[in-house]
Length: 171
Ligand code: NI
Image (cartoon, rainbow, N blue to C red; front, side):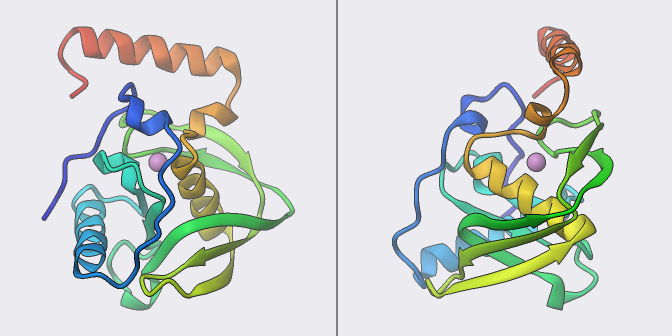
């Protein structure tokens, strides 16, 4: 099923997700399938469980946006174990629609995570994939990409969102 995406302002986005301890259950398989479905419906390249209101450390990524099944990645309880270099680029988030900001991130990133069976693996990505590893892992720790922009820009976004919410345009 397609879940609605939770928007910035909902406390679930700023909470640390619960560690996943049970693997390979029908419930987990279904949840991950639903996460991919929800991400594709929203046209994103990454989605973290808190973004559909579930405070668990699970994220899905597909930089091909559904074009190439080989690029589907599931990260459970991920941690960033290595970063190298720098990249500058615009970043957005499904939970903060309508906004994009330049965010400097590492260019090459290695993540360690568990798969749906609970097996630990490591994966290294560059460019967009490196950015997605960082962005999604941040989500699971209750951090949004706007924590990486200047306080001035973050305040501006916060004010605009508050105004949209007031007008009932942020649901
Ligand atoms: Ni996001």
